[in-house]
Length: 79
Image (cartoon, one colour):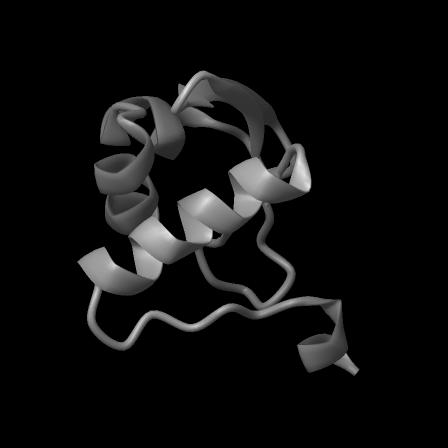
């Protein structure tokens, strides 16, 4: 997840790896600011993108096209 998010957002992988669980950083993608939070709910290295709906949709589309097999896992998947 870290490398995929880094590739799409431009955030350095080392900076993402250094984030403590539930810590966050901000990135700018296509002029929009996204909050990138490290979330380990599933015991895996995961990230949540928070921002304006259009910006999150754009980031997701980039991820979907850049990383074969990537899937979104939301809170619904945890229940």
